[in-house]
Length: 383
Ligand code: GLA
Image (cartoon, rainbow, N blue to C red; front, top):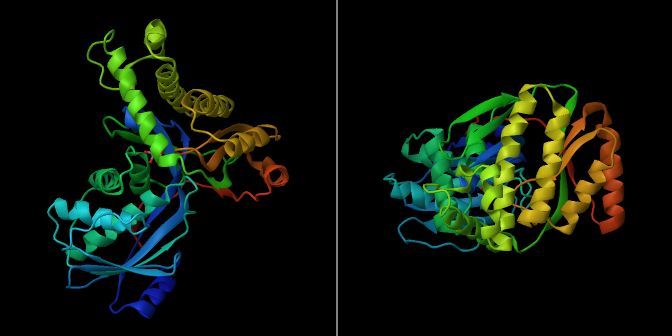
């Protein structure tokens, strides 16, 4: 996003010479619904940013204008405000956790403009949290490292917004790097930036343009089912703390002891962790065909065992897989709508976009937005 334009818009609504911060959305290549099971994920930041121009005030109020919503919201930092079921909750939540960390915020005028499509499963909320975190911190001259900021973003979402998300989205929004995807161990937060170097391949994101309401409640339900699985499995495997600690072979030995639904959930998470590790190995060996097959297997497992897909996602995946040059296709993010991620041979992309959009439109009467994505830089100040 152009800094000059954002500043100009800010100056139209507020006084002061603002600083400008931005944070990106993300797409997850593989490792879905593994983060809150202490497992592995492999996302990359995408070139869609949420940008915030910010200037401190001295009245302990946040004046937040969203350009996308054409709306101005005021939040009183002394009023112990609760969530409003509104986009501003992510900013208010961030302010809330920063204050709890001991930063006394002076108040601020903020102008927000976002390129991350909302409700698309590309983490518009993490992008808003992380850009808010940098913007709010700047008003107190505070500094925190990126890992701590990601954790605070997750905390804001868990405790203030009430969505029990894992760490993936905030972490990649902070740590994204151009031309790299990020392999993250969600238990230790050790990570490795893996170059996505091949000129012959493209990451293509297809948006179903639907978001089913189920999302948040089903998400929290899945988490609870995984925890139940851990509890039952720990009778045989003493000391396990999360599904991350169980290998697929160990799971197979005792799976009959799990109730059918819990068994399916565990099978997804445990196999997805193994797939994620295999996909890194495949990438390091320049074996994109195997990487694509693992993406396909990931989708099938999310659809059949974890049951977080939906008709529109399954359709987009089916249409993609039928296209020439598509090495792998899967849903990405929490599910129940949003986007698919596809690994494509570069010179087949044009035909792919055409075929998939036409066929999807024919079957659903919806026109899917399609983005060809390169890994982007994480949250930063725009100078
Ligand atoms: C959402 C959550 C993440 C992660 C994914 C599923 O995006 O915010 O923490 O759990 O779903 O992989």
